[in-house]
View (cartoon, helix red, strand yellow):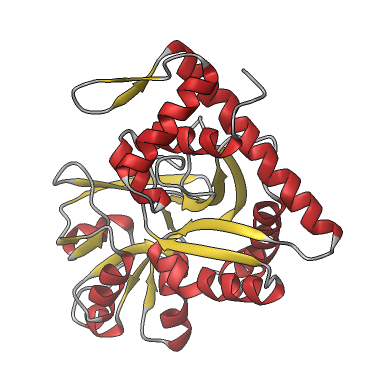
Length: 312
């Protein structure tokens, strides 16, 4: 790598590789495709080597290009970290953090924390995405993602925040119109509302003090949008399988009732994690947000009560 290479051109090259096409890279940088093409040509001249080759659908790196890309990513991370370190000397954290949070949990509980964080650190700008799925943090341009999962991907850094148990809920009106639910087997006689699964038959697994029950159920209603499932449960459409936090406020108000509260059902994930890409030098702004969320989320009543022995 030649020291005469322009860091701005290297940044443009890294974004071209991440985007896959010159047009998409230009869109992300807010410039035209021809400008990106000229920057690439300048960098190849400085490097003295071809960096990209064109395929039928996208651009691929040459051997030299792959090497420059890997070094370039580290150089840009170092530059961001150095700027954040310099900013911190003035005792004001600065930077930009792109964060993704699950829709239901984000709306109800994480959004207020992010607003509090923004007020504490006016020098940090946040770009907040509400989405239940982020498959590629780099491609989706996400610095920090909050995800509920029992098995985080192996190619990311996952920091466990707290447990996120699941519960069965129903409205008082729905329960009043059916036979009492006293055992897991009774659930087969209910309208069952749950997240989507691959097969039409859903195998519900429940645990209670070392005891395990497995029930095969045909769901009456399925959706990956928990707020929709919650609304259906509130409206008396059946027994809903939901994250405990989703039904927390309604349970306190009495508009939802825990079903078989001594049993804990298995859901799509039992722990909340903060997920980032492997990075030896995350920006100080990113570090500050991660630290803040890890400290503050477990303090929320909906999560802290579990540690105090609440039924929920």
